[in-house]
Image (cartoon, rainbow, N blue to C red):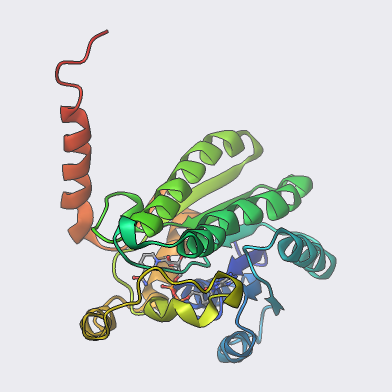
Length: 273
Ligand SMILES: NC(=O)c1ccc[n+]([C@@H]2O[C@H](COP(=O)([O-])OP(=O)(O)OC[C@H]3O[C@@H](n4cnc5c(N)ncnc54)[C@H](O)[C@@H]3O)[C@@H](O)[C@H]2O)c1
């Protein structure tokens, strides 16, 4: 979508990290933004941090895992803005632990936000993008862990591989409607992802394995050296304008992704027609 100025974008998980970076970059390019997040206070602060002098930026407290909440927010966004052109399904959470340590609640929480959140976003907002016929663009946030795996990340990888699949297939489905689809696969970004638990619902509170405190401190220190989420926001805007199928943030992961595909192709040895 080359001409994004004065268009309307919906960004989920917009109160922090990558979502706020995306919202800020869109605003800087003259895009009106509906900021969605489950964390009300953080959303208010995030909204106030943006320069809204020349654009209309609204906030909507919404749990992306809830079909009802996404449906009523979509109606409210449509009623306010009249049209939606860009959808960034970005809200996400992380829970760790080897697969034999994961609880049902771990699976339900992470898949509910990371996978169902994207499904709900597509189901509720895509009809609004299609309706006006002006075309549009969708960016789904996956991860490099949607392209290769890491130990202790079964749930997260399951959710992020699924987001890559949804994005690749829907890119084909939506091309005839002039709607592009990109999948964002960030490497390490300096955000609050390691404290995702702050938004974990009590109803899904049975944690399979708590983070080891010492290990968590080390991982937090590493994440603090990660890329600035505002930089990711700029990459996302470029990805929308250039209609990129994949948006990678870190060149250094190319080798791991290549190794995974080489491993897959090696599996064809001895196969038959
Ligand atoms: N930080 C990284 O290194 C990294 C790497 C790859 C992918 N990602 C992905 O980037 C996306 C953004 O995460 P981040 O790193 O900016 O983390 P973050 O915690 O800083 O931001 C995530 C935002 O999502 C919101 N959120 C959580 N649950 C929600 C729900 N149910 N409904 C609505 N909003 C909800 C949070 O309140 C928060 O504002 C996620 O999908 C994450 O998996 C992050």
